[in-house]
Image (cartoon, rainbow, N blue to C red):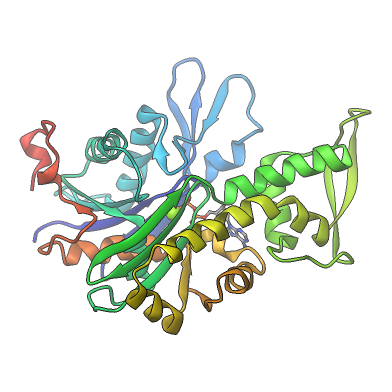
Length: 346
Ligand SMILES: Nc1ncnc2c1ncn2[C@@H]1O[C@H](COP(=O)(O)OP(=O)(O)O)[C@@H](O)[C@H]1O
Ligand SMILES: [Mg+2]
């Protein structure tokens, strides 16, 4: 097959690109900064991320994806074009691409991903459901007649699936992820401690002392922010126990969704999962104590995959190697009924 192949994990907070045989070649925040007057791109990726929440009126920093789907089409296309060019500089033939999507997105949402990726300078696009890609990237052999469960916690969505014989036997995608945990921390600090912080500060708190089960009340950090009453900048001491209380609702929602999928899993496959355990992928699974919390409430062992943030991109790229086979949950471009230009086909 001529030309380069790319596996793209088009995540709400990060875009990861994997090239089979080479590894992960790009990992950048899904953010683009544009000039507010003429809409021209100023920065993309890491550089644009630094500008989030800090831009003057003349610049807008935008996240073009929301909850795993494209919310700002033009900016998503521009961002993808920049990333694809960075990876494929000096290549004459446009790349073939596999892109992951959450498992419960609408046809319109799928179509906008295909069109944005093609417009970004690629020539063939395959969409792959996130849990299938995550499983493959985590090293699970999905062709076997054994059930395996994968839970991918991203920033906007959590995808849970039971896979067997290349297909999805039971699944659920909830539009809740790491971003909702950050938002819960912002709300708690405002409502309980009169302390106003931004989402990026909340994410730092989560990464530093976040704990899914009960956190240590003696483990504290000082958080910069603004007092809601005086309006002045100040420092506020926060304990890991308070953060556990703050994030308990979104954590419970993730665990309940896993329980629902387990309940709807055919008994033979449920037995396999009891033996093999649950594999966790995605950046959000690194929340302190999350595997233990899931195990405690489901009774099933959990393990975090190696390099959990890369699994989806790796699996997406590896799937391209096997694209001769049509997997359940994999959409080949030929299956799309809307018109595509000839150059968009293989
Ligand atoms: N050490 C950590 N602890 C808790 N959450 C983390 C950690 N590292 C990253 N995250 C969270 O993981 C999420 C991003 O995961 P990722 O899989 O890249 O998301 P997406 O695919 O939606 O872009 C963010 O919500 C981020 O805050
Ligand atoms: Mg993801």
